[in-house]
Each structure stands twice: as structure tokens, then as C-alpha cells.
Length: 290
Image 1 (cartoon, rainbow, N blue to C red):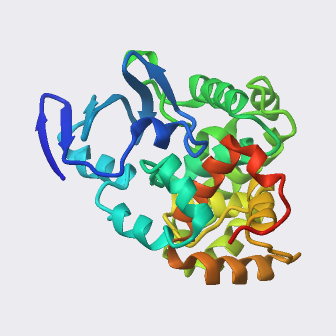
Image 2 (image 1 turned 90 degrees about the vertical axis):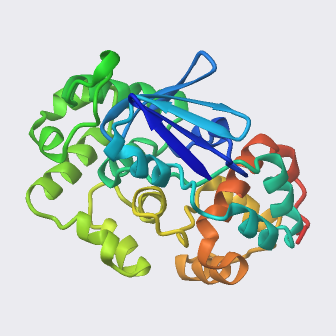
Image 3 (image 1 turned 90 degrees about the horizontal axis):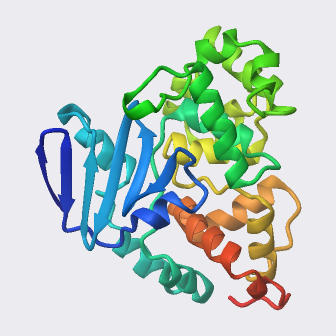
């Protein structure tokens, strides 16, 4: 991987196992929209445009000091080819990798990740995006090209519950305000990233609206705990139908996942989740496949 920078544009070349559209359309990030041949988005406090051609990714609107942060955001330095080779010993996971070999786990701002995944509960992607756009337009700082930054904890803590409801948040309004209030009042949210994984996910559940599934989403996409394995209805179907998992408790699930997928279980989860959502028929057979 190499990159050049000039006039607010970074061009990153020599990429392998990377697909911009697969990364942005798989349900892990909600602030990007297709535009022309690429995507417009608000990321890392900037309004940017990203476009891929072959093994080259170009991002416009990036300050020179933000180049390294965007390389980390897209997880471009990790050797996904090595991980894919290891996981290809698993027949079903190999199918998922072949289907979307360009998937990567994004490293998103933790507070933004927390609020967006609180919003994601019992929701669909298009509606999640509309709610987030409304929150950002109302409570976020203006960025270039008519876009808005994600609101700060203070901004959401000071918002009335009525104004949050007006953004379409529904019952999640109380959770959003409560979580933001705790963080604004001194809850050591940034310190969660320094904890061991199990301690981090338990600490996250102290926040309103955060169960273990949302905690794992925040741990994975916000704090880059790559062993985190968000266990939603799709992953429950995959583990039971494909792998014969029969556990009922969180401890049993974690033991199973740790043994099956190891320290990069969150990356394996991305392939499995994306593949399962687009191949529902494969989960109708209750006979384990691997």
C-alpha cells in the first residue's frame, strides 16, 4: 500500500482485499451515501468523498494530518489476505469470504458508534440513516458541502427528549439522552478502549439502551476489539443452522465463538453476517454444514 497527498486529496494505491462499497453497504456505518461513482460521507469530523478504481482509493476533503486516521478508519494496514487464508479452512466462512472478499471492519468514532447502534435496535438501515441525518442536522456542527458532524455528548445531553423524538428516534430518545448525559457528566467512556475486552463490554452495558449485542457493536466498530462478535438474530441463525451451536447463555456463545473463530472473531462475523443476509435460503437447512 502506498499513498500520495495533494490539495485535500489522498490517493491510496496497491490495495488488496478491499472494496469500498462492501465496507460501506454492509450495515456497520450509516453516514455514507452513494454519489456519482463513489460515496459522500461525514467521517472523522470531515465532509469527504471517496471513490475506488481497481486497487486505488481516492478520498477528497481530507486534511494532511487526517490521512493516517482515514487509513486506520478503513483498516487498510491489516493483512486481510492472511486472515482469509486462515478462515478459508471453514467451508461456510470461505463462501462468505468469496462473496465479499473486500469487507473490512471500520474503525469509527466510539461515541458516534454508540449512538448509531442504540438507534439500530429493532430498526432497518434506511430508517437508521434518516434518523442519524436528522440528529446531525439538528445537533451537529456544520461541515462543508451542507453536511454536519456527529453531535457531541454535551449536545445530545442538553437536547430535550421531545427534540430527539422529533428526529424519529422513538423509544430510543430516552436511551440516547441518558447515555449522552452519563458521558457528559463524567462516565469514563474513552477509558473503555483501554480495558480488557470482557471488562469493556460489561462497562458499556452500564449505559442506557446498551445490552450485550449493542456493546459488542461498539466494542468492535468503535473501539476495535476485533474479538467482539455482535450476536443478533442473523448470527444466531448462522451459528445454529451452519455450525450446530446449541448454547443459550452469553458465556456459552463466547466460548463457542472464541474456539471457532479466535481473536479476530469480529472480522469473521462481518463475512458471515453479510453473506447470511444476502443468502437467507442457506439457513433454512437445519443440518450443520461445518
